[in-house]
Amino acid sequence: MEFQREDLNYILQQAPLKKLEELYKKIDAKLGVTVLSQPSSQTLLVPVKDPISGGEFYAGEVLVTSTIVEINKNKGWSMVQDENEQLSLYIATFDAVFEEEIFKNEIITLCTDTNKYIEEQKSMLNKKVNSTKVSFDLMEG
Image (cartoon, rainbow, N blue to C red; front, side):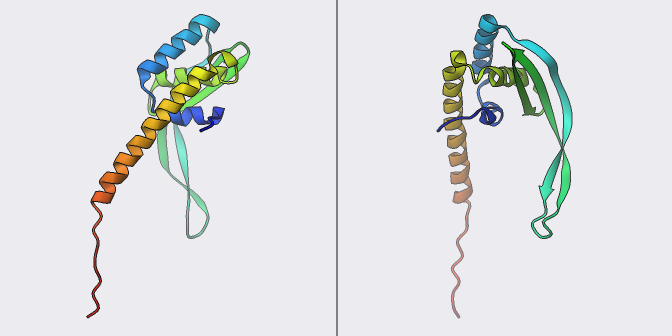
């Protein structure tokens, strides 16, 4: 699978925090991370499309944490679910250096491993859901 910069926010939220931290420390030691906007929590309105009328409405709010960093004049941004300052900082850092060749392969490897984990979790969940399906035989009477 080919990973794009846009995929980082979604995929890496599922990655082990320890692996994210290790890579972040490497990047910070080698290139230096400048935090432009400290990790901050806020709520975000969630739009939902009404399937009947086609209109949109807001279903509620979700808590997110966002961060903006700069590395070698490249800005990186992240928005993660819940209140998680470390995760937001790490992902923003990877976003900033993704286009640079120096750490791109390590980020892609982390994305690949995490994506495998996400697929395995989905598969396990689907098996559990499928095992609860009830089949009704409709008899003609």
